[in-house]
Every structure is written in C-alpha cells, then in structure tokens.
Length: 320
Image (cartoon, rainbow, N blue to C red):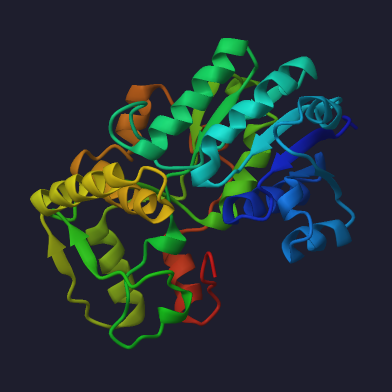
C-alpha cells in the first residue's frame, strides 16, 4: 500500500476548507494537519478539529521559520483562506520552497474567469499564482464554478428559505448563459483526486457537477416543487451599471470589507451572465483540464437531487 500523502491545510474551518477536509478524510489517502493563525486557535471550530485528533499548527504567517517547520515533510499545501486575505498567501511561499513542499494548491475554488480585468477577486488570486510560478513551486489551481448552495431560487411558499443565504428571485439577461456549478460537498471529493494526479501538476483544473443556465435552474425547481416562479428580470445594462456603482463605492475606501463584498457580487454577475466566462467552452480556451473528463467514474451530486434534499428540509444554509 502506498504511503499516505501529508497535507497541510489552511482555512479548514471555512465552507470550502471544511469540504476539502472532509474529502481528504473520506479518501483515506492523506495524513492531514491544520494550519491556523494564533488569533483563531481558541475558536470553537478549531477546537473541534483538535478534538478529532488533528494536529493543529498555530503560526503567525509572518513567522517564516515556524512555517518552514510546519511544512517540513509536507507533500501538499492547500490554502482555502478567506477572500479578504488572499494576498496573505504570499507569506507562505518562500517557506514552502525552503521546505520542499511537493505541490501547492493556492486558494482558487471560484468561477472560471480571465486572469485580469474581469473580477477583483480573480485579479488578487492571479497575483498569488504568479508569485508561485516565480519561485518555481509545483502547483495546481482548482476552480469549482458556483455552488449549488447559492444558486437556487426562493419559492413562493417559503419552503426553502431556511437554507438560503439570501433570497434569490432574479434572472440575468435572457437567462441562457451556461454556468459551471458544483455541490459544495463534492468540492473536497474532487480535490482528493486532483491532488494525487500527476496529470494536474502545474495545471488549472475545473470541477463540475452540472452546467446549467438560470432558465434551466428555474425550470428544475418549478418541476420538483410544483410551484410557479415569477423571477425579476435584470438586464445586462443593469448588471454593468451595478459594477460601476460598486467600483465607485470601493474607490472611496478600498479597505472596506463590505464594499469589497459588493464589488465581488457585482463582478460575479457580470462575469457569469454578461461575459459568460464560467462555462466549459471558456475554461477550455483558457487551458483548464476538466475534472469530469479526468475522472469519468466520479458521480457528482446532481442539481436536481440537491434541490430535492433542500425541499425535503435536509439542506443547510452556508455561512450560517
């Protein structure tokens, strides 16, 4: 039996990080250790990981010598750091190089989009990717499209409100833009395969449960729920105007997290529905590998099955 790969995971208590941890543990192919910053070590979510028997490294990201110690012997470093701390990942890179980490998985896990200009969130990720390439560390960038968990519409009956982060009753443009979607629970299962695959070294890979337009999502939810939806239509011009407003607001205070979130949301909508970036065709153009093609035996959760669970009261609100 092959030796287990040693993984150091940053961001294990977040939504994406939790899925990754679960996927790694399910696979049985990994020895996982957790990296947290000292300010987080006493959080209940971190204590819960400790109670599971996971080794916790509590290290300030400015402490390069301690980072090297934590990474020594690590095969795979995975970052699922939060969106407002993306550039903090650059503090990990020299330590990863010195410790001879075999592969680095930076925090991608987002929609497919061009490297610069379309989304501030993607722009900052690209800075990290370029810093990795400058140092010559083997890497894999994994994007996941948009989650099922934030893609289903509100029903008139209110039956699915309990599982929604925010009400959703809009269709953008003509509703036909195809979008790569993945169930949050499948992200970690995909990651567990991707990081053991030599074909994905120094490559960009996208996961996919389904490719659906908003029209198709609304049709599925109406069919399963038996309820008639009356979505609000948002024009491409309205989407572009919302991006302009978000940019202007952020320019007033570039460090305001709420204004950063506002531009993230507006640019997601523009990228997904106006530019139609988050699609298999554009991913292929950018040189991504498809995880569905790499692992044809993998059976992801379908959107239909996901929504049926939510309708039956078995869903969960993300970021609750």
